[in-house]
Length: 432
Image: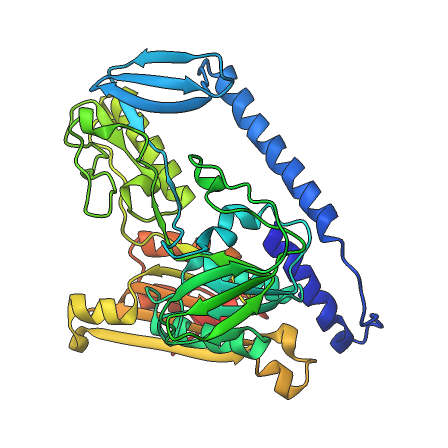
């Protein structure tokens, strides 16, 4: 919803190129949008609660920890005491939380949790990170007029994505006005310059930072002594599994060096009757993946015999970054495909063009809005093992191609599909 809010502002700015008389000072009311968004989220959460109740599922609000292999103690949220639950099957799906660096004054910034508390937009923000969250939120804020400074360790962001996406999207952000500080080391200190009331509470992860404030003024000092003054600082340097309060030591459940719970292909931990899925396992940290894994596990544990070997395949999972513009990817990057199959067995098809929407834009402006696609094929049959797209509507476009790749589509299959004209997507079935 926040991405759409920002995208509407971009459409308004582009309307003049379609000969609409649009005032330069069109006003939006972010605080009203936030209020609506919060209410909508509360409504959706209420729907989930009612659905669980309808299915006979008891929902207990509180903080849980293991007391043994099959027993959990819950510190009830309403303060009424504790509850104990025993079960033959226990699933850990606690997710993760944003990392805040261990530097002086780090709590003066916010994380992605705090971003959604912002009611008054900052004039200038520093975003630290190069992954999904940093790129998405930097894009949103830039699109609605905030001065955005993005600090990254390399020369491009989204470094696990195909080089085409990394390079093109990084340049597109720069062309859009995002100030990208490349090859950046680290910050060593954050100072708050305005008057404020410190309210950081220990415990809950969302309280590890002070939260958003309309009057915030910060000075950030890097490892070389250079300073930057901003109105907000967003830490988006990664996430860590939410396991600290679970008391896993009493269970013997294995964890990785980074704290993720180790599971096999069936979501089993090393302890019988204890399972884990989602971000807490560190595998494909996407909400739909966790939902699919949960459904598969439920089928295996409680379904008919034909589901006893059910497992989720983590191959060719489609994913979209809601950046500006969107990017989508499914399967292997070109370097990954070369490593797996060998360079002599890989053929790459790619194209770059301006989407029809930008035809009325001046040439200089149109050049700032590229659409770029790449298809990575392997073997003599040219099986499509990677597909990478950047441009308008990539999110809506990718789902169908994800189905095709799951079915083992080849480049010839793509070629046999009659193109839908005029669309950007037709380029994916007409590439030669």
